[in-house]
Length: 125
Ligand code: SF4
Image 1: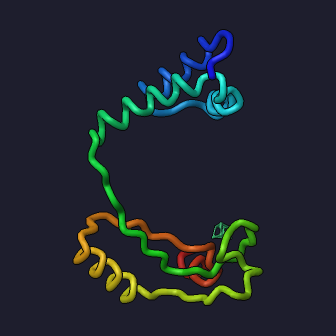
Image 2: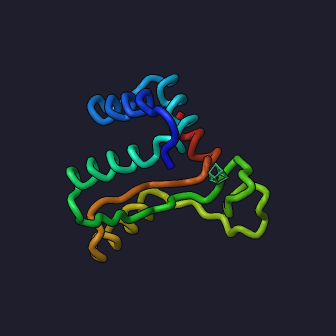
């Protein structure tokens, strides 16, 4: 629902569309005023999406390579305090095998995801 003058919000949305970035304060302003300008924001985002992707649908394979997490977000099934979660951690060979299986199923792009796994984090830092 648009209410009142949203010229400031429109200016920032136009800037975001043209330059693909805003400053922290500009993002904050847009987020704080998102309800006033959502119609204009959604219209612009739909136009950009249609221009880039058309009406095609792209599906990505998701490989969750570890469900260990040091954090404890209440909404999350793999939070550290969930003692009912069966924990696993894939190695490189497992991950590549998952990608092969996904490729054979028709996926062409993959997202690698995990919890914030202390063991893996230690290995990469
Ligand atoms: S996986 Fe993400 S959402 Fe879940 S507990 Fe860890 S940090 Fe939180």
